[in-house]
Image (cartoon, rainbow, N blue to C red; front, side):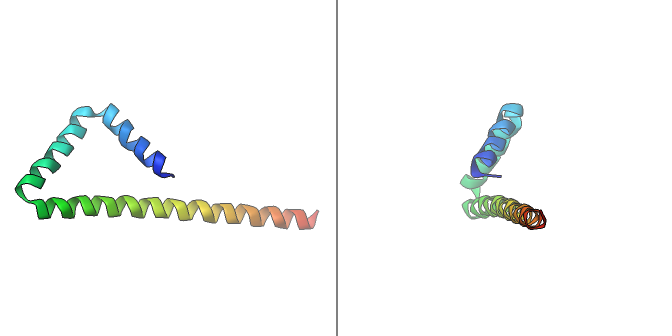
Length: 79
C-alpha cells in the first residue's frame, strides 16, 4: 500500500458517498471552530491511525519480498 493508494481510497470514498464525506468534513470543521484543541486531537489521532496502517502494510510487503527471495535462492541452490 502506497501513499497514492491511500489517497485513492479517500477519493473513492468521497465519490461513492459524497454526502457522508461532506458531513464528516463539516463535523470536523464545526468541531474545529467550537473546540479547536479537541479537533486537533481528533485529526492527529486519525493521522496516526493512517500512519500505523501504512507502516504495517509496508512492513508486510517487505517481509513477503524477503521470504520470496529466500525461497527463490533456496530453489536455485538445489537445482
